[in-house]
Length: 64
Image (cartoon, rainbow, N blue to C red):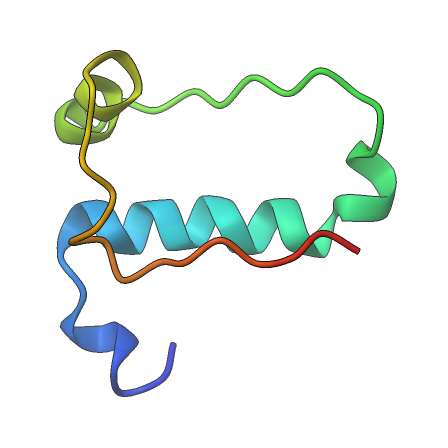
């Protein structure tokens, strides 16, 4: 993590970890159904509720 990422909230850090894992193993996961398990309550809520993504610092990157 860089110095800016150290200031992220817990949910942003967890989403960043998921993003990095998906990006790192992209070639292995391509075309596969992916299920992400988490016991982080806020992260689990975010997947079911309508969340405004504008405050999140994690931005969508172009796919390869």
